[in-house]
Length: 227
Image 1 (cartoon, rainbow, N blue to C red):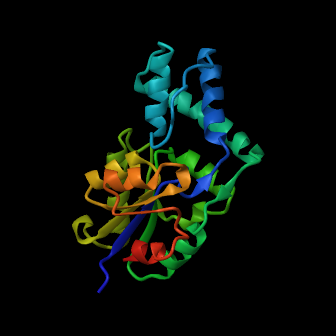
Image 2: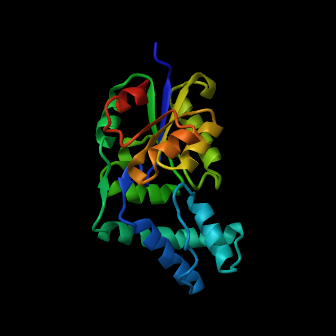
């Protein structure tokens, strides 16, 4: 029999492309709080929202305690809605809808998010393309600043939804960066890496991804996802 399976999907670069809406909202939030436009001149790929904010605050020598991080994140979420709605380049990557449909039809499978986005940010980004309601639970950037720990939280929630112990479940992390791979391996998950975020498949394989494919539209990718 198939093991009970918990699926945890990353958002940016894995499920959707937002055309830079998140970065624009983050930059505007930093400008509103600090008056600076140079706080986030570093790649965001695979980072949690809290880690991005803390690094940006340190870059401009601003207080980076939890209260400051929370305040900037609240500004970011307020600005994100407008940036997402006005983004001209926005879409779902190939194979995603088919993978979610197949997972929804499979027995003993919980479909969740494993994302560095705070929960409100995840809702905004995925609602534009009608995907947010496809995920019954998740591990989010507001759960923990460390990506492995938020994935652990998501895995526990998925197992609980299935009425199983986490140790009795197969956990699969789907992501597009080396940070996704590292975090998935840290919690003992299988990692399916996709090239839609721009990382070379050879790099993702070398990092330890169980499977690395150009997208979930690749032959056999959905079968591998579902085990």
